[in-house]
Length: 607
Image (cartoon, rainbow, N blue to C red; front, side, top):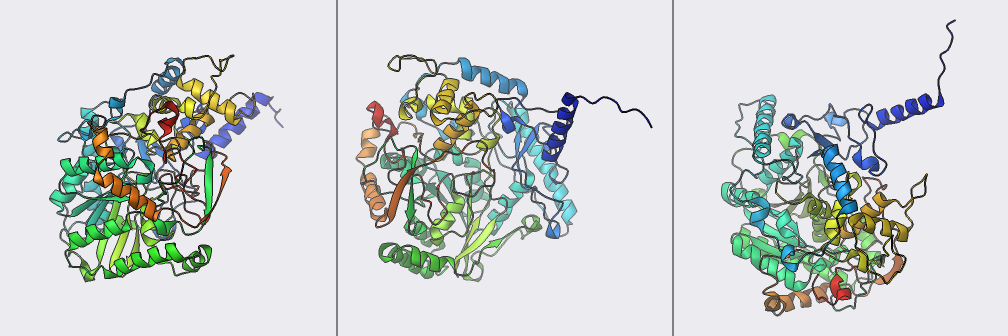
């Protein structure tokens, strides 16, 4: 019998670590740094993805992996629609970490909060989105898929050839997800493009506008969602900005959880959230405006009277209902949601299709992740029928729902179009999963240079011995001060957990409790005009009319989520922040800095 070789404790620990990494699907021998945790771990390339567009750029990071023991029923692969983003190099990540420690934050001017869409997307450039190549019924499925993959590779090569990786923003590299968009556009009679009112030009790709209104000949409705998170004057300014630059748009203001602007707000309640028992979805602001836009588009070709009757019933129920009893009765109703989980997203539907077939209008909801597409559908229905989550990529395949017998809604997965936006702004907008960010500190610095985070959160500088003394702040200092205040400590050495603190701050911004709103060009010069505009007064009155009334509310301090929370948690939407029977959005009264100007502490009057 051969003699056993000595096996040290160090070798045993390495053996166990390699085994754990193999279970997680990590690359062999790859280790994460102590500050970046799981966010910097690179995923192993999966063999189940059918798209080979990543051959253009070999450094692709695949996010939101789902547990799977092989292919599911009908060959369905849950990881087929994972987000595919270009991976940042280790050198770039380390450079940004050093900058977060050394660069002193300086407040930016109000003019730098103005965003021009021409600088973000550069109309006429190669910053387009992949189109479905021409096809015919004589082609087999394999030929069609091969042609689409070749076209997608050419699309990626053209973009990466024109711009460097440092200049490009994150955008989707997974062909399977783009196929979902093609399917939704093909089956839709009206397209809703949902944007976040805090930064609508981020979520409005002009190439999609030209394609839908030009090549497809469809009506495009721009939904400015979450209007309760921005001042009414800013909402009206953005509305007129899009009317001026894109005259074919139908613009609708929407919010799934409107607040009453007449209710006094407490800017120190950033750590508070309200729990309300009652009918939340039925008070959505905007369904009637959307109905009027669809009536103008269909021009009597579809009978929408049932939709109008449903809105009237929802308004009556929200006004006179006693809350939980009626809501429970609705929740027990039959579920008619149809989720498309097969290969139907790649099946041909015909080059030409009959509009309003069988007297039914199909409304497709498209947009970036975390703009509130699923929450908009829930707001239109009046109850939760589509699951929502703050995690980008939660909706992995399009879902259809009959609002009324003549109105069908279609929820498309969130898609990130290529642009020239700073990646820090994309992170703050919820486009990239916060729990998997390799380096979150520069995004915190981007936020803190535009709103006074350290003042709003009453942070004390980690090196300050005298609280009244002024000290220069960097992004790392803000994260460390927040970790000290919240008690975030590392497990072994009990140091301040700055990574968890940075993720917590980013989630506060994503939820709207630290509200960062961008302005259209020229807004600061004409600010007084927009504040006295008749539509601004009308919006304030409309928000007050549909605001919460008669519900039981209670406030409690919320334990802020950290980077360790599960990716698939469906507690509340990052945009509308509420899907349960009791959980209310953080934009409810007494729970949001966005409801009132967060600059009030500095004597300013604009968010």
